[in-house]
Every structure is written in C-alpha cells, then in structure tokens.
Amino acid sequence: MVRSRAEYLINRLISNTLSEKELDELLEGLGKDEVLNEYSPILERYFNELIEEEKPTYNPEWRINRAGEMTSAKPLSPARRFQKFYTDYRRMAAFVALLFSLGTAYYFVSSNQINRLQTLLESAQGNQSKTGIITKEEIAPRGIRRNVQLSDGSLVKLNSDTKMSFPHTFNGQKRTVSLQGEAFFNVERDESKPFIISLEGVTIKVLGTSFNVKNYTDEQAVEVTVRSGRVSVSLESDSSESIILEKNQKLIFNKNTDTFNIIDVNAEQESSWINGSLQFNKTPLRTVENTLEKWYNVDIIIKDESLYKASLTGTHLNESLVSMLESITYAIDAQYEIKGRTVTIGN
Image 1 (cartoon, one colour):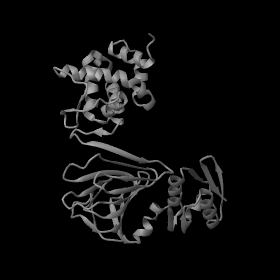
Image 2 (cartoon, one colour):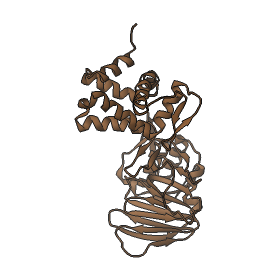
Image 3 (cartoon, one colour):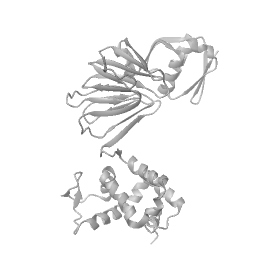
Image 4 (cartoon, helix red, strand yellow):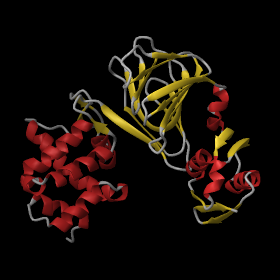
C-alpha cells in the first residue's frame, strides 16, 4: 500500500530518519489547516498510544476533560477529537512529550528548532504562560476594524493596524490586556476584579466604563480619552499617585519626553471612528497621512515637504479613498495620483 506524504514524514520523524528539509516541511504543515487534516489520523494514533501507556486499560469511549479527569462520552470522530486535542494545552503538551518520548529529541537539540515547534503548537489555539494562563491575540490589520468580546462580557472595538493580547478567561483577581494600536473599550463593571490595560509607559485601570486608547508604535504619544465613568492612569515615569480622568477628559502622554497633559474634549467625537467617521480638527497633515494609511491600507507619499505645514478640519463618514483624497487635496491646493496601494500627493 502506498503511504501518503503525511504518513511518510511522520514515520520518518518517529524512526529518527527525517532530514532537515523534511523536518521543515513537517513543521510548516503543522501550521496549516489543510495539511492538519492529513496529519490528524496519524498524530491522533500516536497520541492515543501515549494515553494507553499511562492507563492500565483504555476505553475508547473515555476522554480527558479540561480538569484532567477521565469522563465517559460517546466516541468522537477522528477530526473532532483532533480538534479538541489542539484546543487543549494539556494535549498539546502531551503531543510534545510524545515526540520526545519516541526518541526524536535529537532533532530538536538546537534551540531554534525547539522554538519553531513551540511557536507552531501555540499558534493552534493561543499561548499558555508559565502561570498556566492561556492567552489569545486579536489583530485588526491595516484597512480593517474588528469587534472583540472578552470572557467577562466587555466589548472592544479594534481600529486598523491594532493588536490586542488577553487571557482566554479572566480567572485571577484582575483583568489584564495589552494593546498596540487603537481601541475603544466598553468594560463590564466588576468592582472585585479591576480591568487593566498595559501600554508602553502607561497603565490604565478601570472598574467598568467606556474609553478610547491610542497607542501606535509609530507615534510618539499615548492617548486616553474617557467617554463615560472614570479612568485611573499610572505613568511609569511618575511614582506619584495615579491620575484620575473624568468624562470628556483626554490624557496625552509623550513617550519620548515622559511628559503628559490633560485636555477637555468631546469624547464622542474623539472616538467617532467606531462608527466609520474620521474627524479632523486643525489636525496636522502628517497626522492625517498616518491615519489614512492605516484606515485605507495604503502608502502615502507627500512629494512637497511644504505641504506638511497645512492642517485640516472636517468630518468624513464612511467615505471612499478617492472621495477623501478629493477633499484633502482641494483643501491644501494639491493633486493626487493612485497607483496600486501607493498614493502620491503633490503640487
């Protein structure tokens, strides 16, 4: 009987005869859904053999629940059991242990290969930290905005070019997430478990409120704008008491100088992007340029540096890129050209 490529690779791995090129092929396959469908029956067989070794008897109608206990259940299909295998970190860990227990360890003696396997396995359904907390990551690429609901019921809207990491479940005494980019938070109130956002140089703490956070790595400022309730902000550069922001207040923290200021704003307008609206109020052209690049997933080239002296004011609701460029170039007396994803603006 002719073996499939998947079976060939896995058997070569188990028999310690896998070449470096074949190892690369196997590891890349573990990160692709379509290839996993071929690997699943073979991988499951080895996984079940490991379970059988740990138990005096094996009932195919038993399975391990998330608490690590054996429970009686109807047999699951191979595809479904494989899915459950990869969504439970214990089973991922068991698979890693299986590979090493079957004599394949010498293939992974280099830290680079170990890290590659670890990354591929973790990417299946989140990561698990040393504390046992499974973390997830949501990404909104340029040109895309995304809604995320956290396990506590809190709602988060991610703006374009944004990444947020958070626990799969908030089990501890606090709810902590990290953010790169911009997001609007509507936090479910829980006075016994504060909600904390970790940023570069800034920590935000709330019990339950709505607010906007802007923290792009390519911008020098971190901005926190409160739409309802109160927000506590702590600065790493300042050991004094936390700063309390009220509704319609905005904190701007300069990452380069470690300084900040607080201004009064219309918080609804500040977070209007969540409704598809871009609003500029005497906004420098360079800032407008950065915003449009993220919003429309384009690269903008300003040919005439003198144009950066301009600032723009206006509201644009769900407008196309062409419509937006027509308005901007009219206001600054310039012309534009679009080639693919590149926009050139000049006189």
